[in-house]
Length: 636
Image 1 (tube, one colour):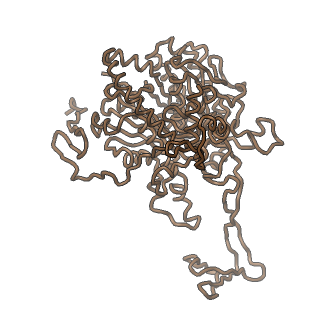
Image 2 (cartoon, one colour; image 1 turned 180 degrees about the vertical axis):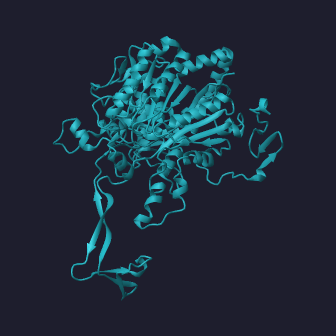
Image 3 (cartoon, one colour; image 1 turned 60 degrees about the vertical axis):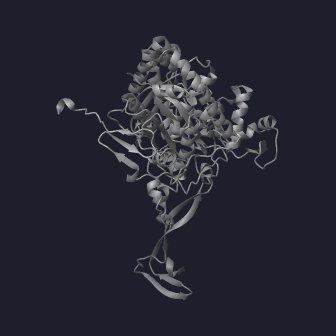
């Protein structure tokens, strides 16, 4: 029997704020929401940013002064908007105006020897032959050099790129649990995965009563790995900076470590784990792994996600040197403001318009999937379902960075799969695209050609196209996660976020059969049946997902299970929705903590009971079935 992967939970954090309960989506369309929904998201952001807290049931500002909440939130709205989405680089990660670097220099003796004092403990292990060393007392020696000396001089530079999609100002994930010098990407993983699980409205132990330990899988990672000083960045820098490598930098730097942290410290998962690394398409590659687990029937619940924290001087330097990022000078030139010093950082990313490069961002996004039967059993919240994900390479390439034909294939397949569910008319009238939309000159041409060609093939006269990177930037591995999180809110609030940073579509964009949305589009909560999520990754990693609306998902489930069983589901779901809402209220008040269970219920061989038929784990509600199918029975 077919198994539909249903989205029952989502969580995370990006420049728009907290993902769960659609708060990140709501930030994108804040001024178009009802007063109550807008105030709720303002409060969520204010709490994250350390500007709001609840003390003994009383709302207070960050300094502890009692406030009248609604009036205060209206007054602080400009501060919340200025501290979210794409904006000027802040100095909480590094000082963009004073980035340390070294220049090589050669010091030459000029008539007399080069001479300096140095502590004996700081001498090099191998003393150069032309160094003459004499004691100067108190552990200090004098060095005389008759030749030359190679040195590195300390210098500071300003970043040419000063726009980025940063987490909300003042939000620091390491303060929410015992972070123990974890890389920022792992801190964000703990917060994001916790947010997804806590917002489910179903206790994790309740889920485990329905699912065997080996029927859960976690696919989560990053494509750049952990590159700040607590991860691979420090591993490579430490000795050059005169410091010591720590025992944590290498292991915590691995690209699959977000999945490892979720397994070891959040879920205690014994099931399948791992990650795909596929540049900017990484999230969808992981999603493809997860839905195949559910389709096959080997797994009933899957946690999918990525966490990317690439805002470091080195990563910015690398992409800027490639010419991939929009520099301050580029932005000023685009706007004709050559005499101004400060560009419009909020409009740094301009998909399908005149643009100059993408805008780097940080984000962690997670969704929880399960098979349709488990969703009905649990009364789980249904945010939508994953129809399919398609992955194709580009074939032979002129340059590893140049685009190819792979994304034409993935978009065409995703459109065909979407049509299979909602029909030709549904595809033409009731679907839209969340484009990769990086804001680069090359992307606006190549991706528009792909989408336009597919639209023509299916007689779509005006296919709506959105691009969320215009708000939050490009979080690399997590970009499709941002697109999914920013799309699911449509089916509650009825608004497709427009590309507000682009004034007009560029002349070289192919759009005869496209409707590139430069303003918000109100279509109603059930106005769209499906969305295509598109990713184009460096090196020829292409992926496109077909995501189905909750109302379409419910219709499919009713056909499979009948009205009576779905009525029972709806009754069970009432309590689940109430639990999710209680979590949201507690999170807004700052009364929740990230899940982090260090040294908790650690198992060894004594916790296992083994027979030829099954393996029982102490504390698990269900055994692991060892009656493994023989896929090669006809060959044995």
